[in-house]
Length: 193
Image: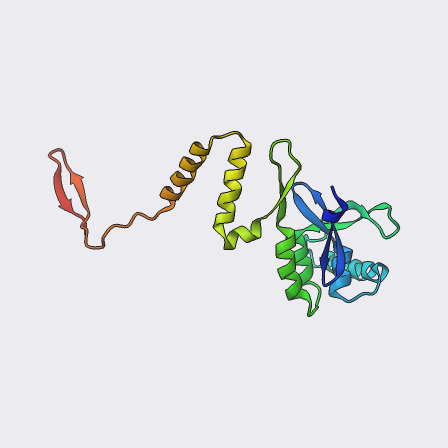
């Protein structure tokens, strides 16, 4: 993975992350340092240790869901550090009293839901699924690109997209239509109340 994709910035501070089990995992120590305004990673690590002890005592599964993953250390070596996925980071943020928590949650929603989408044997392309919630046409465009990469024809792709759109349209019935059911062998109609 590119080192550029492994580092993301929040308020000009770098947060290490790695792609593991089809999702992003973020360094818990880096996030703790930002939320608590710790000047160095040593103090942030001590703070994270205290929080993790409290969470363990409370029976929280957040700490057990953290993974020890190798990330680049300040000295350039790859060292194991506590990492959590987006859901785990949201839970950790809730246990850290900080005025920066809300802006950080918004940032994490954008950075945490980026996924790698393989297109055949081409390099992995980034897609931001959060944007697709606000703009469904981005999801449709991505779907067309995936079908094209799989070798489907333009006509087939367009028919598929139209078919999906038609299926999603609501079927409205006027409110004054009375419903009837077939009763007995002679198929007499009886009004349903």
